Image (cartoon, rainbow, N blue to C red; front, side, top):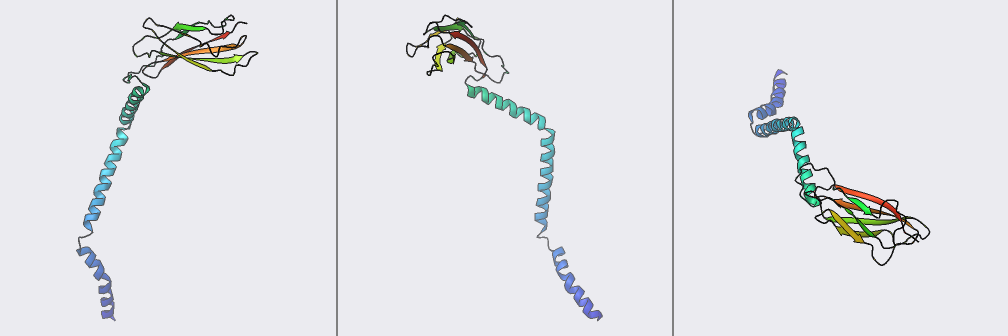
Length: 186
Protein backbone atom coordinates (compact mmCIF):
# COMPACT_ATOMS: atom_id res chain seq x y z
CA UNK A 1 0.00 0.00 0.00
CA UNK A 2 2.83 2.28 0.79
CA UNK A 3 4.35 1.63 -2.54
CA UNK A 4 1.15 2.48 -4.34
CA UNK A 5 0.89 5.77 -2.41
CA UNK A 6 4.46 6.59 -3.28
CA UNK A 7 3.83 5.71 -6.85
CA UNK A 8 0.72 7.90 -6.91
CA UNK A 9 2.56 10.79 -5.24
CA UNK A 10 5.41 10.38 -7.71
CA UNK A 11 3.02 10.51 -10.63
CA UNK A 12 1.32 13.65 -9.25
CA UNK A 13 4.56 15.48 -8.54
CA UNK A 14 6.23 14.52 -11.79
CA UNK A 15 4.49 17.26 -13.91
CA UNK A 16 5.17 19.84 -11.19
CA UNK A 17 8.87 18.92 -11.18
CA UNK A 18 8.99 19.22 -14.98
CA UNK A 19 7.40 22.68 -14.86
CA UNK A 20 9.83 23.84 -12.19
CA UNK A 21 12.78 22.56 -14.17
CA UNK A 22 11.58 24.13 -17.41
CA UNK A 23 12.53 27.78 -17.96
CA UNK A 24 10.48 28.36 -21.10
CA UNK A 25 7.71 30.27 -19.28
CA UNK A 26 10.05 32.67 -17.53
CA UNK A 27 10.55 34.98 -20.52
CA UNK A 28 6.83 35.75 -20.76
CA UNK A 29 6.57 36.50 -17.05
CA UNK A 30 9.62 38.77 -17.20
CA UNK A 31 8.17 40.69 -20.15
CA UNK A 32 4.86 41.09 -18.35
CA UNK A 33 6.67 42.48 -15.27
CA UNK A 34 8.69 44.90 -17.41
CA UNK A 35 5.52 46.14 -19.17
CA UNK A 36 3.75 46.57 -15.82
CA UNK A 37 6.66 48.55 -14.33
CA UNK A 38 7.00 50.79 -17.42
CA UNK A 39 3.22 51.37 -17.44
CA UNK A 40 3.20 52.38 -13.77
CA UNK A 41 6.12 54.74 -14.42
CA UNK A 42 4.32 56.33 -17.39
CA UNK A 43 1.10 56.75 -15.40
CA UNK A 44 2.98 58.32 -12.49
CA UNK A 45 4.89 60.68 -14.85
CA UNK A 46 1.78 61.75 -16.74
CA UNK A 47 -0.11 62.32 -13.49
CA UNK A 48 2.72 64.51 -12.20
CA UNK A 49 2.99 66.44 -15.50
CA UNK A 50 -0.78 66.71 -16.10
CA UNK A 51 -0.98 70.49 -15.59
CA UNK A 52 1.98 71.19 -17.88
CA UNK A 53 0.69 68.89 -20.62
CA UNK A 54 -2.82 70.36 -20.44
CA UNK A 55 -1.41 73.90 -20.71
CA UNK A 56 0.79 72.93 -23.64
CA UNK A 57 -2.10 71.39 -25.60
CA UNK A 58 -4.37 74.32 -24.73
CA UNK A 59 -1.81 76.83 -26.00
CA UNK A 60 -1.27 74.82 -29.18
CA UNK A 61 -5.04 74.63 -29.76
CA UNK A 62 -5.41 78.38 -29.30
CA UNK A 63 -2.62 79.07 -31.78
CA UNK A 64 -4.17 76.75 -34.34
CA UNK A 65 -7.58 78.40 -33.86
CA UNK A 66 -6.11 81.87 -34.29
CA UNK A 67 -4.44 80.86 -37.56
CA UNK A 68 -7.61 79.11 -38.79
CA UNK A 69 -9.72 82.22 -38.15
CA UNK A 70 -7.54 84.10 -40.56
CA UNK A 71 -4.86 86.14 -38.99
CA UNK A 72 -2.31 84.09 -37.20
CA UNK A 73 -2.81 86.09 -34.02
CA UNK A 74 0.09 84.08 -32.66
CA UNK A 75 -1.75 83.08 -29.52
CA UNK A 76 -0.78 86.38 -27.96
CA UNK A 77 -3.96 86.53 -25.94
CA UNK A 78 -5.69 89.27 -27.95
CA UNK A 79 -9.24 89.50 -26.62
CA UNK A 80 -10.06 93.04 -27.72
CA UNK A 81 -12.50 93.29 -30.64
CA UNK A 82 -12.19 96.02 -33.26
CA UNK A 83 -14.03 99.24 -32.42
CA UNK A 84 -16.80 99.75 -34.97
CA UNK A 85 -19.50 102.47 -34.87
CA UNK A 86 -22.45 103.23 -37.16
CA UNK A 87 -22.77 107.00 -37.58
CA UNK A 88 -25.45 107.02 -40.29
CA UNK A 89 -28.28 106.39 -40.08
CA UNK A 90 -28.18 107.34 -36.43
CA UNK A 91 -29.95 105.25 -33.82
CA UNK A 92 -33.63 106.25 -33.64
CA UNK A 93 -33.54 108.35 -36.82
CA UNK A 94 -37.03 108.56 -38.39
CA UNK A 95 -36.44 110.31 -41.72
CA UNK A 96 -34.17 107.87 -43.54
CA UNK A 97 -34.28 107.57 -47.34
CA UNK A 98 -35.36 104.25 -48.90
CA UNK A 99 -31.78 103.63 -50.13
CA UNK A 100 -29.64 105.14 -47.40
CA UNK A 101 -25.89 105.41 -47.21
CA UNK A 102 -24.60 103.52 -44.19
CA UNK A 103 -21.36 104.88 -42.75
CA UNK A 104 -19.25 104.93 -39.65
CA UNK A 105 -15.86 104.37 -38.09
CA UNK A 106 -13.90 101.13 -37.83
CA UNK A 107 -10.91 99.64 -36.07
CA UNK A 108 -7.47 100.10 -37.60
CA UNK A 109 -5.34 98.40 -34.94
CA UNK A 110 -2.77 95.82 -36.01
CA UNK A 111 -4.64 92.62 -36.85
CA UNK A 112 -8.03 94.27 -37.49
CA UNK A 113 -9.51 93.00 -40.75
CA UNK A 114 -10.67 95.59 -43.29
CA UNK A 115 -13.98 93.91 -44.20
CA UNK A 116 -17.09 95.44 -42.64
CA UNK A 117 -20.20 93.24 -42.82
CA UNK A 118 -23.63 94.88 -42.61
CA UNK A 119 -26.99 93.25 -42.09
CA UNK A 120 -30.15 95.33 -42.49
CA UNK A 121 -33.14 93.59 -40.94
CA UNK A 122 -36.84 94.48 -41.03
CA UNK A 123 -38.21 95.01 -37.49
CA UNK A 124 -41.78 96.28 -37.90
CA UNK A 125 -44.06 98.45 -40.00
CA UNK A 126 -46.99 98.38 -42.38
CA UNK A 127 -45.19 96.72 -45.31
CA UNK A 128 -43.62 93.56 -43.80
CA UNK A 129 -40.49 93.67 -45.98
CA UNK A 130 -40.06 90.13 -47.36
CA UNK A 131 -36.65 90.96 -48.87
CA UNK A 132 -35.10 91.38 -45.43
CA UNK A 133 -32.43 90.75 -44.34
CA UNK A 134 -30.19 92.70 -46.70
CA UNK A 135 -26.51 91.76 -46.50
CA UNK A 136 -23.92 94.32 -47.57
CA UNK A 137 -20.21 94.79 -47.12
CA UNK A 138 -17.84 97.74 -46.98
CA UNK A 139 -14.11 98.25 -46.59
CA UNK A 140 -12.47 99.96 -43.64
CA UNK A 141 -10.20 102.69 -44.97
CA UNK A 142 -6.77 103.42 -43.51
CA UNK A 143 -8.35 106.52 -41.95
CA UNK A 144 -10.73 104.31 -39.95
CA UNK A 145 -13.95 105.04 -41.86
CA UNK A 146 -16.33 102.96 -43.97
CA UNK A 147 -19.35 103.67 -46.17
CA UNK A 148 -21.76 101.73 -48.40
CA UNK A 149 -25.01 102.76 -50.11
CA UNK A 150 -28.08 100.52 -50.06
CA UNK A 151 -28.70 99.05 -53.52
CA UNK A 152 -31.31 100.57 -55.87
CA UNK A 153 -33.26 97.34 -55.95
CA UNK A 154 -34.92 96.32 -53.78
CA UNK A 155 -35.26 99.54 -51.85
CA UNK A 156 -36.31 99.64 -48.22
CA UNK A 157 -40.06 99.92 -47.59
CA UNK A 158 -41.47 103.31 -46.59
CA UNK A 159 -42.61 103.72 -42.97
CA UNK A 160 -40.92 100.43 -41.94
CA UNK A 161 -38.49 100.16 -39.04
CA UNK A 162 -35.12 98.45 -39.63
CA UNK A 163 -32.02 97.49 -37.66
CA UNK A 164 -28.63 97.87 -39.27
CA UNK A 165 -25.81 95.88 -37.67
CA UNK A 166 -22.17 96.38 -38.65
CA UNK A 167 -19.48 93.88 -37.65
CA UNK A 168 -15.69 93.83 -37.99
CA UNK A 169 -13.38 90.97 -36.97
CA UNK A 170 -9.68 90.78 -36.21
CA UNK A 171 -7.12 88.07 -36.89
CA UNK A 172 -7.62 86.57 -33.42
CA UNK A 173 -11.30 85.94 -34.04
CA UNK A 174 -12.64 88.83 -31.94
CA UNK A 175 -15.68 90.55 -33.45
CA UNK A 176 -16.79 94.11 -32.77
CA UNK A 177 -20.34 95.16 -33.64
CA UNK A 178 -22.76 98.05 -33.46
CA UNK A 179 -26.51 98.20 -34.17
CA UNK A 180 -28.74 101.17 -34.93
CA UNK A 181 -32.50 101.22 -35.46
CA UNK A 182 -34.10 103.61 -37.95
CA UNK A 183 -37.39 104.28 -39.76
CA UNK A 184 -37.73 104.88 -43.49
CA UNK A 185 -39.53 108.15 -44.27
CA UNK A 186 -42.85 108.25 -46.10
